[in-house]
Amino acid sequence: MSVGTRTEELRLDGNALGGALLELLGPEGTAALGTCGSCGARGELARLVVYVRCPGIVGRCPACDAVLVAVVEGPERTWVTLAGLRSLELLRGDG
Amino acid sequence: MAGAAVLGRLTTGWRVAEVVDAVDETPRVRTLVLAADGWPGHRAGQHLDVRLTAPDGYQAQRSYSVASPPGEPPAITVERLEDGEVSPFLVDEVRAGDRIEIRGPIGGWFVWEPALGGPLLLVAGGSGVVPLMAMARLRAAAGSDVPARLLYSSRSWEDVIYREELGAVADGPAGLEVVHTLTRAQPDGWTGYARRVDEALLREVAWPAESGAQAFVCGPTAFVEAVASGLVALGYPSERVKTERFGATG
Image (cartoon, rainbow over all chains, first blue to last red; front, top):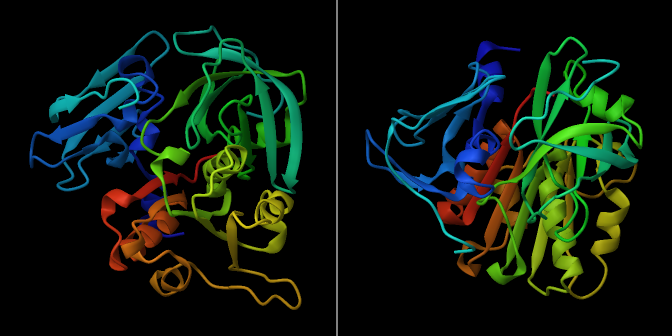
């Protein structure tokens, strides 16, 4: 198995952020719309490019690859940065 | 994490679930039906996280799609990955009555409900069929006549998860159309597809882009990206191609 293959298999998407952000964004948080602070691309968190073995989870902009979200879940606390996002739009109710 | 798993200190968001039934789907795949007090109900396409704690305190967690339709207890279908930490335990060791920790349901984007209309295109690679099966089961349970088609890539006929049920839901005028492709081995006399899903195969099987179809694609990363780019090449707008990748860690 080549190094390239291994890297590809570790590349997931923003659906994988949902559990780590459950307490912060609620069960449907992957549908929240993020705007990239670097390139301005806007889309659902579910569409981010996500690596889950960093350790922790890193979510990158699918358009420009900038790091938008990082989460590390430890035994005593969960550490989150959303510093790469210009904004985050949370959907209300079923809308 | 072979052998015993103990329940860790329950932290925010996690709850204890009891395994109430375990059903072998294929030699490598098993469905676990869970009972979890306070489970708020789930939507078709959502997943949950499972956390196992070893006697020494080491914890490992993985995400598994919910296979059961909304309104039923959560069930997960797990494929054993041979060098995995979690999946061999869930497939080979867990028995009815055992308890595991879960959190969820999770996900607000990779979800389908009949009100979204159609046509509906489901494209599965291997155990990527699980969340799509929740959608197919919801469609059947709701009596939806939204036209729906499942293109399902498996290595061999023995690896096809939910094989009998997929045959059954295909019956009837509003049945789910199921198209299999078997990429590694085919039974004698197989007349179906025997190649990987690519743009050429999608051109034959997928609803035309002009139909306004909504596609859900789930499988390993390389599979999902090949299918998604194939659908976009056929004219599907990217917002009508919802994708969920699963990794190589089990």
